[in-house]
Image (tube, rainbow, N blue to C red):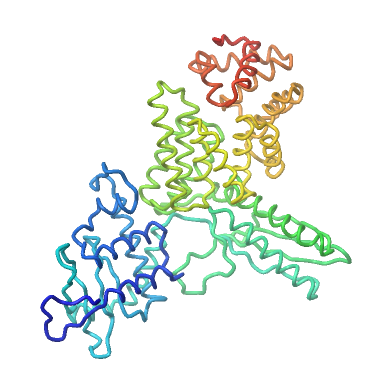
Length: 571
């Protein structure tokens, strides 16, 4: 079957429908078509609708409902998601046709001002270069499409503008995404000069690249862009190192360098045994330690960017700064700071709707709204959790491997009492990146407070061992672990180690633990703090505890300790 004019005019040519579908498949299968899964579904939908004679149905509303899964209440006037995604899709198509698709016979474009695709025959042997055919929008009443020539002047203008379009396209690709730290991992120097040393150096580099790549908040590069290449932003950090061999061991020295000024931000050394049985395990262990130190929340890269001041920052850096401010907020959990970070993240996802990490952190902010602000009624509480779950799932839709999105989804499901689903999400997130101690500790806590204290507390312990410079949350969780194991002296030791005195959860755990440990004065001090700073919690302590502990026996045990600390908790 061919796309043909109802009344062919002299010089008009047929454009087979199957050829258009083949061109679509060629685009979707190309690694150079830099589009998200949602943008690919967008393109497939509008192309198939047009080729099936339903071009007049291609509207913002139908795309939102049928492609993006929006509800029937979707309003394109207040929700610009279709327009934004269309802009991203147009740029992805432009870049594809200027790179891998530069010789493709059929051009598929989506003109601005609408969403109906245009099919353009790039060239035919019987046609001059300035002549080509396009498929115009058709009605649902006829599968026949009219073919018309592009004006030669228009086509000439497009060809003449090719170079500038390329530069604009790539610049747009960069500016249409938030800033993401880029780390160049250079080949490690072989200081011994043997084939064995070279092989170990290469293996270490590849293992570190693999482990670093599990963190989705950074981009790992193995080569820097060439001079003049504007398609890729240059790396801001360089990971370099050297390998030296002795008789039966190897030594890796590695450092992270700030490319802007050449300063060394971090350096460490690791060794391992040369025996084959130990070598692979040692390389993997070293790679995990390096990636955890550099790329996790509160790691070296985070600290470097958190301390970096950018004058008149562009939109991409402002959006990235919102994610940095989230972690800064977690230090003191101030309600005022939470409100400003929430606003910042909401603006970031409106500006960059495909910013998965911002969606995930926004979900965690909504969850903090739920668990730190005492809910006034069940309806408002449910609405907050629904908003948190929606943001988390948006993050996972954009990037199924985004651990912050999975963390938000896990917590939203847990507080919604969907325990099995929450723990299943947690298990999946940990498998995606077992080096992310932020997620490991949170998943461990969910396991523990759901009743699996043994496995959950083991994960919390491992997270603290991998990240001893955490904010002190692990100590509160380990105090709770010791408390429920019956070791009250150990629980007191852990709670006294924690510095997170601004977190109201700390004071609840401290009151219970200190009362059981025989520290009455200290327990009274914690009760006084809560009565002064969280009066709504002290009046509704049973609900506050039951919100967090899944098993009724755990709730009753903990409330018994709070009563011992002087709280008046209704039975």
